[in-house]
Length: 300
Image (tube, rainbow, N blue to C red):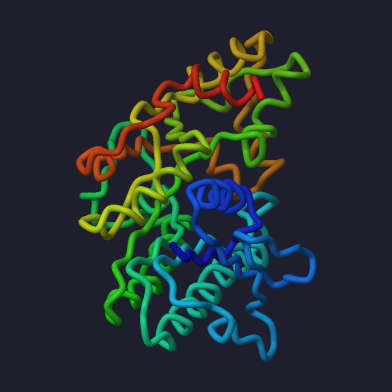
């Protein structure tokens, strides 16, 4: 297959590119700085989102398009940062739709990034893809607008999947930050510890994108989460166990709000997000259990 990826130089994008190449596919990575990368027999870097760039002129007929582009959500959430988070996602997706419209032979599927934040937060409710109404906080609004823009692909005949990522666990991303207090012997629950953490191993995150590409019957939202979410206090205890570090020093809610601003919502609030669509279509998780997933990550 020929697969185009935006955000292909990021955490998930690099892992997905590796998986695609290992399966014998050719990957076309759309990036603002193709000059920073070397093409190979299996990976071609193409410039985009720059003045006068026309990536469609360099792309072959594609089988699939994966859009993961967007500014990182990590960092103190000023109003400027919030605008950058949403603007970067909408701008990238609008350009993806423009490229798709120019193609006489369109890819079979667009897998567009999204987030479990679509659902808002809850300590009692479990969310599946059948939950239609988004939440009303900032991340929910970002995810809803992002998906609405991507939905334009459906109007031009491209099957569209919205990959609502949970907390992705790997050697990059959030896990190193979460692990640091434990490595410094100062780890514990965050806030009340009762908030749910819906997580997924990076390998399953990439495999679920591949599954979405391969499964013609799958469209619409896809919760990219493992089947067994954990409360923060239990997640933290398991992390401490795997790292062989003590679990004893709670992180106060006030401290998180002071350090992270509105971004503290990511760790102080949570939601149970279940992968109902993936399981209904027969996806088999490689890392369904948290402890085994963490041990796999830290053993490498």
